[in-house]
Structure formats: structure tokens, C-alpha cells
Length: 325
Image (cartoon, rainbow, N blue to C red; front, side, top):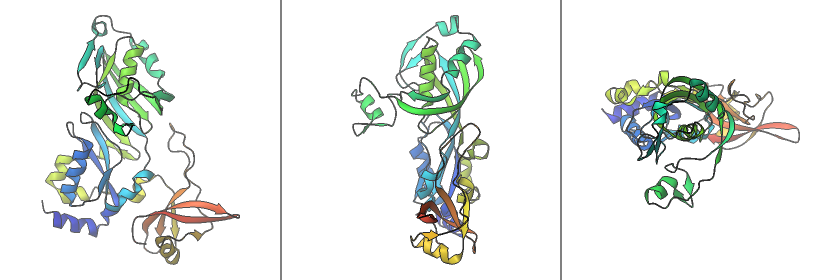
């Protein structure tokens, strides 16, 4: 691997403002993946759009270079294929943790499929979810998993609001349940596994997890890390440009207005597109007042703009400038 030649290819193709759809393997942390992508591409500024636990596999969206500034504009709904083992309770709510209890009834007197389906339906919609003790949320300035490992975890964890847009029962062969979940950012699938087990009176733990989608990114088009290592130049050809990654309407401006926006100035403009509203059939979201702005002369997206109105006049202000106008 020659980082210099890869860097040259990256700059030539303007890939510094793009995203990689990486297929994360089991056993690696999200931080490991980011470090590996840095080595593959030779780019120092690399970030990601959502942590995956080491045991999990699947879609991990990685931002390269200046696209790191745009991570907050990516759609944050995600979908997972999860395997849950009923009758098993662990301290981490997944199969990697210490076993606290085993309930043989999950095998000897398991619930009927219909009972499992009814229990799953109770998770749909806006719910309050208690995160696992071994999770990355902050409590009193420290990560909860750090407190749990040191024996200082709080006796209770405050529930957090999440949205489950859709949950499907894919298969059930006691004690193993396989589901697909489409959910909001911040949803813990380990908590669903734990809570499903509680609803069925058996206990439950997450024994497998694949992230299938993250916003517009799908597992079918995710690039395995080992393939990227084997052929870095081919990997860079898989970089998704900003305009294909963001669920934002595209607005073109002339060269002069592009220059002004690039300097941080807002412009008045007619015929601005309406803000993005609905994200998918399964998901209702309030409109966001952001648009992706492109230079009509060069056909080159260069900033995310915020649409506003003052004294009856609509305007466009630069929110994030991520490339030369």
C-alpha cells in the first residue's frame, strides 16, 4: 500500500468531501475501523456516523476529510437484523457479557410464536428505553461502561426516548428469536433483547447483530475492510459523494453568490426549495431548514445552507462550508 499514491487519487477525485460505506467485521471497535481507514486512505481527518459494538457487524458510515463536518446532516435512522437468545441474562445484555442467570423454560416450555410477536409489537412507536449498564452514555461526566467496570454504576439509569419505526419477527426457533428493527438514533438493540425477555418472563440477551442500513447507506453496497486493505485505490472509487449521501434538497447558485456564501455571507434568493420533510414511509420527521448548495457554473456542491426569512424576504445563509466554492 502506498499512502502517497492513494492520497493523490483521493485529491484528484475530490473524495475528501465524501463518505465510505464500510462493512464492519466482528471483533473490532468503531475506533479500530476509523484507524484502519486512516491507514488505508492516508487521510488524517476521519470520523464515523454511529458506533457499533465490537460483536456487531454491518454498515458503518465513515466520513473522509472535510465531510466530517457534515456528519450531523446525515439521516440518523438505522435498521438492524438482531438475534436474541431467550432465557439468558448477562451483565452487558449481550452474549459477550457475564452470564447472570439461565432460564431452562426458554427451551423446555418456550412461548408460542404468537406470544413473541405480540410482545414485539409493544416496542413500536415512541418509547422510553433504559440503556444497558455497559453503554457509552455519560453519567456524571463519565461513560456508563467505565462506571460499571469499576463497580460504581448508579443503581438506576434514567430511560431515554427513542422511536421504533418498525419491528418484524423474521424467525423463531426456541430459544432463538430473529428480528429486524428500523429505529431512531440512540436506540439500543441490546435493551430490546433484554426487555423482550422480561416481557416473556424468561430473560433475554442479544446474541447477534447486523446493522443493515444507516440513513441512505445499505449493507448490500458496504465495502469489507479486508478488500479495502487489499486494494486501497479501488476502495476510494467507492466513496459516496456528498450529494448522494445527504437527504437534503439541492439548490444551485451562480458563481458570484457561490463566492459570497463561501466567504460566510448570506444571500437573498428567490425560488428556494422547500425544506426536506418526510424521510421515509416508516418515519415522520419535522422539516429541516437546510439545503445542499452547489455552484451552478462548476456543478460542484460546496456548502450546506440554512434557509431563513426576514421581513418577508427569504435568504440563504451558509451553515457549513466544506469545499471551495
